[in-house]
Length: 347
Image 1 (cartoon, rainbow, N blue to C red):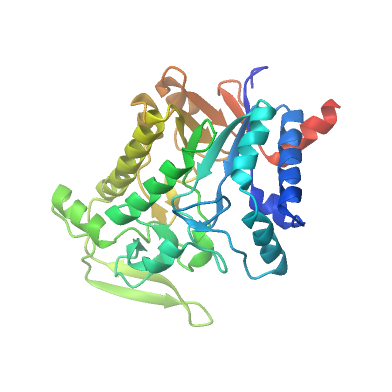
Image 2 (tube, helix red, strand yellow; image 1 turned 90 degrees about the vertical axis):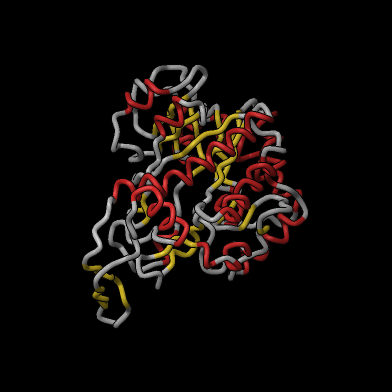
């Protein structure tokens, strides 16, 4: 990494505050300021602030589901402290005083975990990514092929753009793998609007098959389904799923640009959400077409393409941040622990 290049670091307020829940809103604000100071001391220039935990928002939202605790006493104590202060507004204020850029990380495919989860996901389980036989759904992963789900996500983006932050980063990572026993690649993504869009584009019915064998684990739980027959254009299918995501990204970009703010994308190891829920995510095209200003590639992410592909596509003022130690990338991504260690070593 070239000397003087910006350093990104993530900040997870849920983990930061839950370990030792603040006794009051004032104590929560103090912890936020100290966390930002530690990052600044470590040479971090840009903070990627995670605004929610598995569907529950860690800010004062009128759109999404506000964090109101989980199954533990520490979660309830944290909820009580957060009710009295908007920690996101506090984080923006702390970053401004520390002269750090803050970008708000939004996860559109991470809306459920036991004792967490959004009310929208709970009320719209018919809008989740589905298996080919439509018998199994991927909890927490809403399909943007449903206009109502996409509109809900855009409302959250618009709400967050009102905060004093440099912009939004759409993070496609998800905890949904913990919610399903199915591990077969491309197991999900056959929901009705995707199937209809594929039929119109390619004249194929992706939900049609000749037979299915359900496989069980030793405890008799179904852990796999093998479908016979019904071959179809899988690359086309990935493109169809990706087209709904691309449409969402373009609309989010228009909202961000209307406020004079940046839009970024944080990619995962897979092109898509998870190995069992993939789609086309042409990050290089997003850069080239100015849909995004920033592309974040955490360690191990985006390795299906050479870094040079992304670098050559970035627009003027665009940035590519890598979790790998590279002399080519514009920015380096550090973990909060690594940033803090840097700060301690520099003292």
